[in-house]
Length: 298
Figure (cartoon, rainbow, N blue to C red):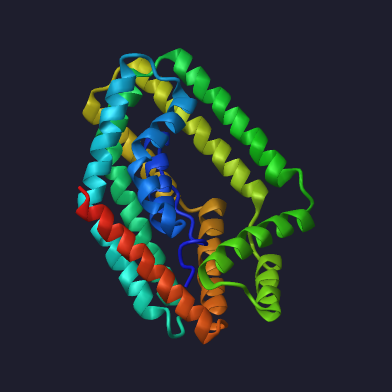
């Protein structure tokens, strides 16, 4: 079951977002690269964040230390939980699954990502309070660059090109998990992509809205000088609004995408052969073995 490739988890600030994204990538990427990727997360995360904020000499050692501590906490507390989720997925893989089972697994993965963001909140608040106007201008420039790249990748394409791009992405991920798909399975994947409710324009509008909200929040910190507890509470509220959007078109779209992903994942898995499911079982076992080795290495 390729539960994990189709479930999007909205994360919070840049600080917590990179941690969550990289931890999932490390836990669910190519088996041979998991340990190297995971152990290098603090370094990779630092440079990712630095590209957004251009840390100064005072911030750099604090950020590096906090990232090291976050990884140590995650290794001890979260890796065993991820291994348990993988074990459950492995037990389900030989049989058929329902969309409800896929969504339930997705919710549990989302909970683990949100646990990482919650753990990162105190350090994120401290960092946010230290940002200068020059750094916020750097963040604005990075947002603008990201938006231009998103436009090139998604908005400047025709609907047919968008479908082709999404099909290629899903095909690569699905075949990485199950092995080569048959012609019938590829056709099913094409139909799923063609019928998708995915709207890149709506996603672009929401990401820009979140960016502006983040900039207002951070500039408010600089002007109002809140206490660390007040800053953390404000960041937490921001995270929750992303994780649980208020009623409206974006929330409806997110829910529709989630339900669509659960249905499509179940349909694809239920159309796989016994040998493909055996491949999925082996892949999930390899993931578990690597995670256990990472836990033991602490």
